[in-house]
Image (tube, rainbow, N blue to C red; front, side):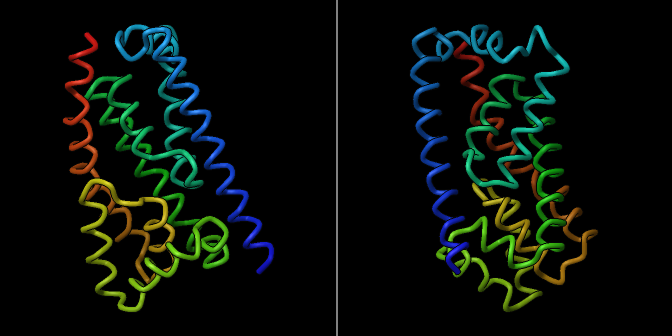
Amino acid sequence: MENKIKTHKIIAWASYLVLAIIIALGVYLWYIGAFTHIEVLRRIVGVDTHPILAPIIFFILQIIQIIIPIIPGSLILSAGVVLFGPWMGFVYNYTSIVLGSILAFMLGRYFGHKLLKHLVSPEKQMKYLKWLDDEKRFAKIFFLAILLPGAPDDILSMMAGLSKMTPRTFIIIMIVGKPLSIAAYSGLFRFIENFWH
């Protein structure tokens, strides 16, 4: 029990640290004009100078934020659209989120409740674990949650791993359900790219 509390404290402090870094980075990027000129931001990330490396780095960040819920998912998703444009941003977001979610599902299936207890706060556990009481109902709720924007992919994917849902069903739900929410983000942030141009 003591180890679990320590793990939650470490994750909480890590989240605060990441938030502080994001704020500091945001101030710096604003100062150098990255929020008013997309060319500046693209140059920093290396989208134009490293067309292969930049997407790989993005994939890694996207998968990490699903497995370890420290980096805000909406921030990474939005960055994909802004950096790579609405179409390629959608493709990179979609494929990396699906792959990361499948990995989270398999980790949940393999490590069970032990993993969830170390990565998710007790409050969120109580909120979402109730969904597992009814397996058929959970599958429907899971599909609706994945279909709509703002779903906590990390927690839901690990929870699906704890359920009796088959990997095939999980993958189908992710492939079919995820494009709508990602497309919503892509459409929402498309005007940012146009504004920066």
